[in-house]
Length: 377
Length: 143
Image (cartoon, rainbow over all chains, first blue to last red; front, top):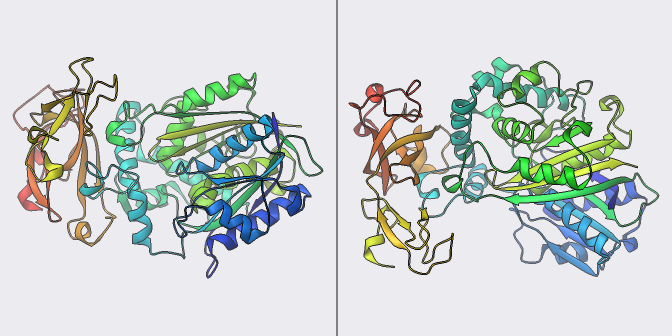
């Protein structure tokens, strides 16, 4: 057991002139304030990575810059799964007694700190350097391949995928920090610019600047406490060519184990925060975890099932697809929103009940999976 | 690594996988050991390059100028007869379930695997009731 005491989330989008360290600082300051703690209360630091500021020792760099002297600090790197992997590590570290209060932070000027081609090429290196990348692959192409197979196996249509983009935009409309808030329709998604068939630009998350931070501790604090009950991972394969099954990546395994560890089942979950780098990612994860039947996620989204007032509120900040994606902090925003929801501070986004939350993140091409179960105190 | 492992990734116009004699595992990405059992003497497995399209995409947003010049282009994952999955280029219109055979085409300055449909075969796809055949595909020379 550990406690999430505070969270800090910047708005996502364009932060012209601001660096990785600036965005990490803004998020960390907000998380400390939310937890009602001072710098000196922090004895552990876990940070992510930044494509615009590659460094061998980013945690130590940030500790010096921000002005803390932790007795435990390092960076973590598992692609998009990094945020939840850092939370899992902090959870285990405070349980073990290695640290009392850990600052978990990431930030990146991924949008304004590099060219779009540089971002796309760097991300494509997730693929195999000899057998995939030389073919002219991109991250959307890997997911386009998966989407094509998913449509074939489960009779899903492009309009079904589009429903998830429409849903995330609808949620983002209630969050002033979101990068994209204008409502969109299924038609808008279907008519948007093709990127990697069957995925169009509105099926893909944007590239953003932003940051997010948490304080995780062994004991509850003065701030807004939420219990972290359990955390599990699974790493099935790195490359899409080597994936044993293009419609089954292991999310059910890690989420099932995390729920079992917490003594819970899917029926107990009142709020879901699921990684949504592409509409197909969200569809596949929802259906593999069991939050939607196979082939049904789009229809459920259309029917309001995942809305604030629906049966399974999902990514009420707008997810990566509409709140935005700035790298490691992208998925952390899912947890920041969960924290705000579970502590009753989400204003007009607030759900009626969020006592038990299931979170799931993935990195690479559905390669690395981290599931978390949280409970309100 | 021995010459019998030379494939398109080092400029040779062929597909090669590996297999383990100890545990019968097969895999594509070259290693000097078996990732299943750790056996230190994997064998080269020359691939016929014939298989069924398992997944297909068309890349419109290319990663760089070289690929931008040929976009849009199709990428496929092919389940080969030898039960090894391989990624390659294909004609636009490449569809899941179609039977294909590899050729090697210079694309963006490199020799790359290019899977062309085998037009005469019927009812051999992994789901024959939905398998399109390749008649409508554009030929590689049209790229």
